[in-house]
Each structure stands twice: as structure tokens, then as C-alpha cells.
Length: 407
Image (cartoon, rainbow, N blue to C red; front, side, top):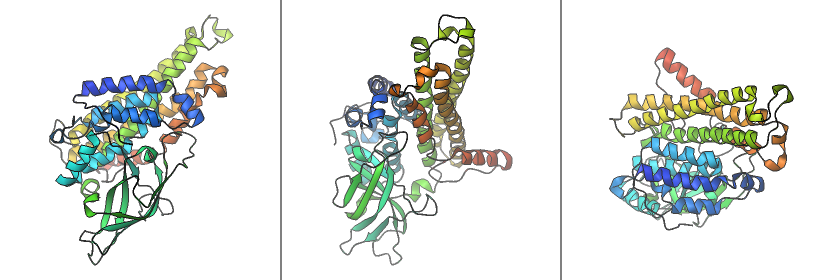
């Protein structure tokens, strides 16, 4: 799947490229959703544009853009099509893991591939455990010094478009036969590796074209140099979790802006005014104008808190400030706030679209409900009720947020 990629060197260039792609992607987003037509050609274009390599460190030839810029690029794409914006989410998370915990040789190898246009997708979540944090997929030492992976992963967003899979595995090796410490690892392996089976079985009501299917791993063999210990990034104050969550907030903020833009276009061009308003055009109805003002406040607030959170994650990850535990805690709390606000805006505005647009907007052939379905589905990724808990404990008790991948 790898394409020949352009090289992006500045944030301004990245924003310009993202905006041009988004304008094209938006035109058929609703139709792709209706037909569940996977955006294979669009993801090829995204990879060829060079955007997937913008966080590669400068020492390895990348643009080394900070998290705040990546969040804005994600938001721009999400306004157009949040499915396309979500597909590379895990890609950037696992590029960040290499940056934080990969060996020099691993960084050299994988960053070169990324600059050439390679794509990473996750194979992380499982079913059947008591919680989503449990990992049953095993990593077992083989007699020849390699390792064997067996397990099944679900919700593997982007796996249908991937060159590499980042597979979360658990090593139980009390005898030390494999030469690695027991714990959780990410295995970077080719999507076409023998024993890997990627199934297109995602049937969510929203985010239909993200390629979030099942990945089955049966006696997949990897070398130790394909393994990165997860604890160095996740169990330490690195900003790993806030980086990942920032991009989720950006997707939700993008959905909110996209839904509001679609509502405004519909009201201007297709809605009829309510007779009691005594106006010729629906866009002149003072009650409709009032509601649009309220919705704009919700969306603008989501965008502003996203910007603030992005700057906090920059500081926590060494862009413009010296990182440390306090900066990491502040970033997690800022991102928690942004996630809550974006969640509210995405679900409220995508529902209010019909309220302001009127009965005509509910026609099934228009598929305007894809905004709400995308918002409702994506905001389920991790519960905002726990964001309130972490914020409340910080304010009331001075308790820092925990160190894990979703805060």
C-alpha cells in the first residue's frame, strides 16, 4: 500500500496541504458514508501528501511538528470527513511511541518508512476481559530467539489501509527465556505478515468507513527488534496519554464545525421560514439566528479549548518548554476539558442541525444524520464522565491525573 510521499517541512505547508485535501474529501463524505465506501483512494492521497510524517523528528528528516499543530491538522480533516481524520489517529500515536520508547535503530528504520509514506494502524482493543485494559494477546519466546503472537483484536481503526500494524501484546516470561522483561509491548509488524488476518467487519452506526475491523493473529512470528516496551511511555510522565486524547478531541471539534457549516448551508439554500416569523427566508428568522448564535458559541468554545489543550501538550512534550510531571498533569487536565467540551459540541450541534433546518433536512437521501451518527459513535471512545472525575479530584484534592493512555 505504501506510496511515494511528498516531504512537508513547515506547519504552514502542512495546514495548506490539509485544507486542500479536506476540500476534496468533503464533497463525497456523505455519499461514502451512505454506501459504506471505504476511502482507500483518499487515504492513498493523504499518505502521498506527506501529512502522515509531519511528527517525525527533525533529526530523522521530518518536520517535527508539535502536538498543537497536529491537532489542528486533524480538526481540519475532521470538518470534512471525521472518518478520514480518525484513520491516522493510531498512526500518530504509535509514531509517538517510537519517539518516546523506541531504540535508535528502531527509530531509524521506521521513521524512514514513514517519510516514504508508510501507514501504521492499531491492533489494540480486545473483548472478553473484565475491562478494556486487560491484554490477553500473548507474546511467547520461541527456541530460535524470536517471539510468537497469538490473539484477536477488535476496533482496529485503519487496519484495512495499513502497511504496519501496532499490536498490543503481553509477555509472560518468568524464566527470562526471551531476554525481555515481562510486561506489555507493542509489536510493529507488516500487515501482510503470515498469520495476520484483517477482517472488514466493522458495523458501527457511525464512523462507518474507518476500517475499524477485526485483526486475528495466529502464530505470527516477530523479532525482538520489532518490539517496543510500552511502559516507558505509558507508565511515566511523558504526555503519551494527553497526546492521544488531544487528537480525539480534535476529531469531535471538527465534527461540530462540519455539522454547523452544513446546517447553515441548508438553512440558507433549502429551508422554508416558519410562517409566524413573517420573513421571506429562513435565514432571516430571528429565532433561527439566535439558535445559530448559540451553536456557534458551543463550537468556538470547543475550538478554543482544543487550542489551549494543544499548547499544554506542547509544553508537556518538550515543545517550547521544559517538560516535567507538573506540565504533564496540566496537559492531561487541559485535554480532559477539551474532550468534554468537544463531546458536548459535536453531539449537540449535529442534533440541532435538524432543529434549525426543519423537516426537509430529515430526508433520508440527504444523509445529514451522518454528522450525528459520527459524533455519537466517536465520542464513545472513552467516557467523559471520568474526565470530570479527574478534573474534580485535581481541583478539590490536588490529586494529579493518573498515568495511562486515555487521560
